[in-house]
Length: 320
Image (tube, rainbow, N blue to C red):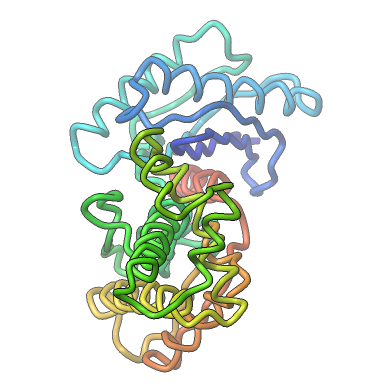
């Protein structure tokens, strides 16, 4: 029996699954974030090590000796050749760790290092052909066709990109509320909604919350549900913000389709991330608009988690 590791390393948590060659998950572990661009390589190593240790300890309840023949690490912030070299060194360090209750039998061709969008695609669909539209705090759209050609749109971060994301929706909502308060735009329930949610005496106090408290991207993105609820309640301004987000996400997805698929391709688009769970039917709006342009596209929610997608990619290397 062959055993592989699939690792999903994000900004807030790391998930590891230990699988056998039938695709069965024998162990699963979680630890802290592993985006080395933001937390450093040592903290990233520790998170991955802890996640592997937890998955292996769970698997050892079923099997006593675990020899890892392949590993796939899908990590946030990994996209350039220099990033891959950094993670390769990390894999070497993992093989020398005294804390991991596994044996290693890795060959260079059995080490897969990629970004987290790719494993979200594979996990979401169950194979490596299609498109993933990942929209949470940030946004990224990634596709791969049957020839192995890939295309990424977005993923440029909250300053340079992230259109359609929770962060951009939240910022647009606050901007609209302040414009309405000024009298520059039509009235919107967002004014009172932000005041109530943040316990503000006046909407002007948003200045204190956002600037003086030095709120970060995740804290601001967490305000997106205020816009979502307002849109679901029929607020025109909030609905315009949601419609703009949908337009951006449809445009980005269309760009991927045009780049690596034909217009009449039959393919699956998997949607993942917190924004899709909103009450204002943003998912339904996105599906309707995209399918109107590409009738053969089937939009789905994720079938499996990204770590499982990483495990499937690891398994592929043992079958070649």
